[in-house]
Picture (tube, one colour):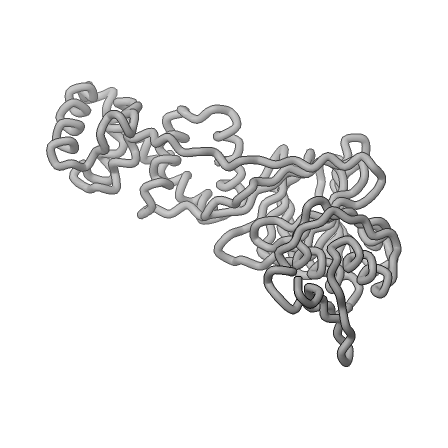
Length: 338
């Protein structure tokens, strides 16, 4: 997430962080955002210095922050700048007030967010636990495709936030990420954080083995979890491992090691359109769907080293639809009269 000085939600987060009012999980996620962006590091550094200077000033002048808060909160309510009590709980510290008033100006509406603790709903998290020997293929809300390997756990939100896309992996997965420069994709593993805009890569992060990342397309940024300031960019055709708390990069040649995801692909309650997208990407096929109603139908199916013709037949039998071939395309559609 890119922290912006003119964004009230971001200002609220910064104030909570500086006032040490975040819980451990919220603080850890916020520090990831800081570590992965140089501008975020600069902004937090500047505000920390201002905060320290303010503490020193308050100690010398013995500022009565309680009175200042009472005056400010009354003024904000009089001017209808603070939501009613039944909607928002005011839970700001006097220390946060003094900081906000000194740096931003108490008459500005944007500062209101520094003293309001909004009841924000956390994203609903979903989890895939793969222990059946196949590859579970999951299409995410943004169109990204994740191939979850055996003995692996993948956690992801039902819907991504407006600023970023955060997921977590224990084990092995192949990621084919939909590009979105305004919304970085961040993967948390046992040993590292991986940040990407849009690319395809394979990650191994089992508890009993060392971290390994192979980039097949595009580029990603890898940061050590123990020290996020230690990071490297990995581009297509490169391999990254963690060895004794060091990021070690080398050249990677396509040796077929990434083909594991196609051996036995399992789809669970996926739309036909998502399944067709995955098959086309992996097989180089040209399967299309004639109508939206058919494309939206859902099924659970497993493909185990099947040919395109076998896959097509299996889908048609399962959904009771039909297909026809035209030039180099396979067109799926509902049967006549259905």
